[in-house]
Amino acid sequence: MKQWIVITAAVLLSGCATQAYRAVEGECAPQAWADYPQNKVQVVQTRQRVIHVSTGMRNCFTRQDGNHLRTFCNDITRPEFINYQELVVVDQNEAVRNMAIASCSANLCVQRYGNPQCKTEQLLVPLPSPAPSLSPEPFTVK
View 1 (cartoon, rainbow, N blue to C red):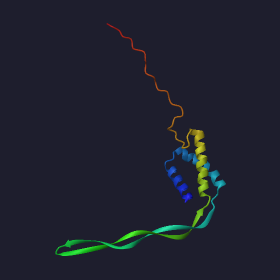
View 2: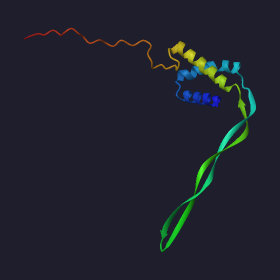
View 3: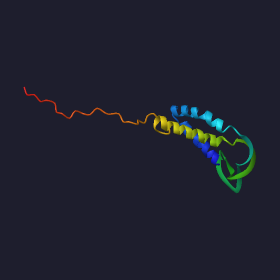
């Protein structure tokens, strides 16, 4: 479960990542892959599927079709979740590798851009704006 949260967070954060952040990730990825290579193993995971179970009640309605009345009935169902086991192949190093890439990327972004997202819109030093003239203009009478 923890692994899926990390993966989901990484995907969501990379979806709105700046171009500079993606470039920094590209610099960090080779070392992370060297430190945490792919380690595929088979594991049994518990999954769920939904089945609809009849409640024993029905929802009926009647329509008039010319001179005939027709009644239609539908069973009312409720969802029921059934657990089952499935053998899947997972990369045991994926979560820690993604965390290493994210940490390295954030550190490089702070060094280069002053923020962990590599945002370039943020100015570290504000630009001076031209100050309005405080001296009055000379007044001449003709």
